[in-house]
Length: 398
Figure 1 (cartoon, rainbow, N blue to C red):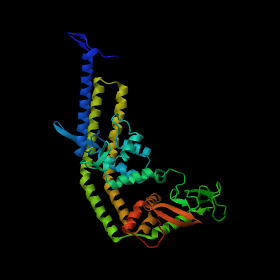
Figure 2 (figure 1 turned 135 degrees about the horizontal axis):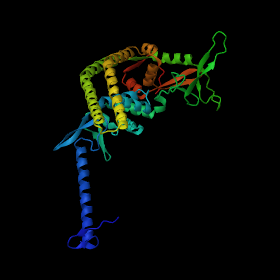
Figure 3 (figure 1 turned 90 degrees about the vertical axis):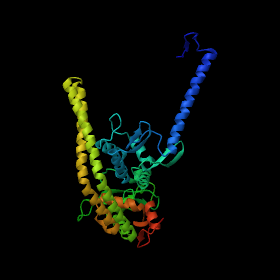
Figure 4 (figure 1 turned 135 degrees about the vertical axis):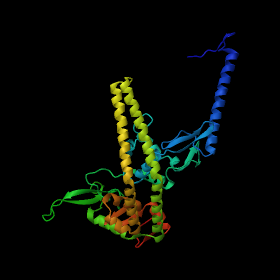
């Protein structure tokens, strides 16, 4: 629909010279305002602040005459940090993290769980380790990072190797699935049980084998699960961290404990504040029911949602009370691993053994039922080049 300009004295002035002047002035004013906005956003970027809207985990500060900036949210920021830490383990899919975030009451603005793409964007966003970007430019910003770059890079590595790193839920969760490769065709080994026809050993025998064996003529042989896993265990016996690296791990462990003690009170207060806000909303909702200003169906739906979120916060408080013990147990495991890699691997449960494998080995190449070579991960190469890892026997190939 066309817009007409009406003058009290001259009537319709939409057409002709006057109309064109008005249209040109309006277009010019729009361009000027747009350029001013772009200049202001670019200036904010040059000053070290992200011009775009806030990311999840941060809250706005400032205003009323001063430039708005941001800082980590006292409750959500620790959850986002833990999100990165969980994904870096390789044990969680995006769907798992969706449910986990929902349990932590980290929701979208309309109260629904965060979408798959939103979580992917969080894990791919360098803003969380301090980098800001605007129109092709990037630099370290003035905001406080939630994570460090090492953790961000680990998540990127896991994202790139998602299928290798993700532990799928299977009937038989074989330890070396995703790590062992065939020498002849470079295909991953798979594993499966076979009936044991021996009278003395009834049941099943588990084998690793190349996926192309029998189908496309791959000559790789079947190898018993226990036999190959024992060979891998011997690979760990060749490895030892340097004394300086062990000392660094101990120092870092002390820093983590000190940081946890410093932040515990603020995190607890954040949970208490959030619970108080939810309880206030619940009380208001109950008052509305008593006053008759809300229908019964709406009340039940909203009341149940609030009750669920309050219960989640109570569970989080309980988890946090146990966090001190969990942290100490984890630190104890890390110290044992640093001091004696082989012994820690032997004593570790299967899920933790996969973490150790993932830390050291990109792939384990098998030829003629023997380990032909072990390809190290990028982080292992760095430690090796810095002489932080001592290899007692040759075997790892770059």
